[in-house]
Image (cartoon, rainbow, N blue to C red):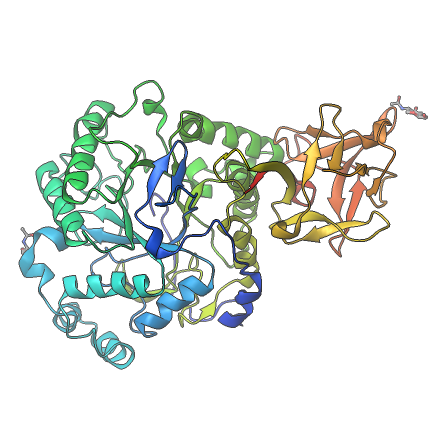
Length: 544
Ligand SMILES: *[C@@H]1O[C@H](CO)[C@@H](O)[C@H](O)[C@H]1NC(C)=O
Ligand SMILES: *[C@@H]1O[C@H](CO)[C@@H](O)[C@H](O)[C@H]1NC(C)=O
């Protein structure tokens, strides 16, 4: 988490109503592509991450902060560790990106301090009482033993772990001038970094749910440069692999992990194969104020092209891309973040990349001097047992499951029509050709033909516009201009058809999520409008 300065106050209530965890279970459908912990370790096959059986495993992770000055995974003052691990699984995440500082691995006198003594030295007296109450078996463990217990608890719930070296020193991350940003910075000694990576990799050798290590979070600052990146990152990767050949090695780019463009014409060469993954961070604030200052279609178009140029090209080159941080303030009141997130969902579903949400954390023990700081980006609320924003979790549940797998000879290919705003897909609702939004796994396969018709595969039915403000329905007559659909606007997310030879409409939803056509909204110029109800993404799907 970087570059953004939060002005959080001590607020323990949220304006969103919260729901108990069990409500989420209705969104969790089993998938044949999901993995069990026993088919680990993971490796790569082209742009996909795969398990031992060669089946695709989509990493749908959540960040769990354990790198800051308290050095303990957050939330253990609020709930028992095993309950938090279970909630992660119940919310549909299959892995955790667990953050740690180098000193935890390299400074034995620090690592061996007990939680009780460490929190006591930080003056967190009440926090100790609360950890004692919720996690009595942890409070007197050493910091390193507690870290291992967190990994173990996740493993027992079949949650995979990516160990993310976030910083050198235990502190909140990330600023340009915090001395932890780039090789050679005050607190970023490359040799100590390699030693710490090796020790951590070795410590978790044989712990099967530890499937990857991300080598360093958000490289940044005045010292950052490409030659040093190529000098040190492959060394770190080799050190990790030598200590623990099972784990994926995950490399971050420059500029707060917003930029991997320098790899485009200069591939990374390592002595081993099948373990290399790249990571990208993408927040609304990664792009200044573009989301509010520009027309949303144009902003989404421009930023999508940027993301492709800076990192998305790696997928085409045959490397997995892991978007290891994204997220929004879950109070949901920011117009810019709303636009960013819908655009994110369109790209995330279309590319079907692996990802980690920022963040699990409902509140911090201590952050930037504030005790019990609320985390508005946290999927859990400050009590760590309620979901902060159920709507948001429902939306991302659509991208927790993979759309695509590996292209085996038996695989069948079709498309779904995804609606980023709701996280739902266009489904046939009745015999009368009525269409509505529903869960993507329930979607029949669509086909987008060279004649620009959108038809349900294996049937004669195609999508047809009627009139502005009317239903768009399935029909068997598919040759007229009102059954031809083009992807328009700079975002290429609006599906438009002509209803007369000179008049167009766009696919849209009504207030009951029924598919209709309306006048095309917000095509350009205006930066106050919101086209999101009209954004649809045609997604390739593979069925094994
Ligand atoms: C190691 O940790 C101890 C205990 O926190 C601290 O006093 C010491 O300064 C640390 N050493 C280094 C090199 O950071
Ligand atoms: C579009 O067609 C309608 C009737 O077919 C006509 O009245 C109108 O002037 C046309 N508009 C344009 C911009 O050509």
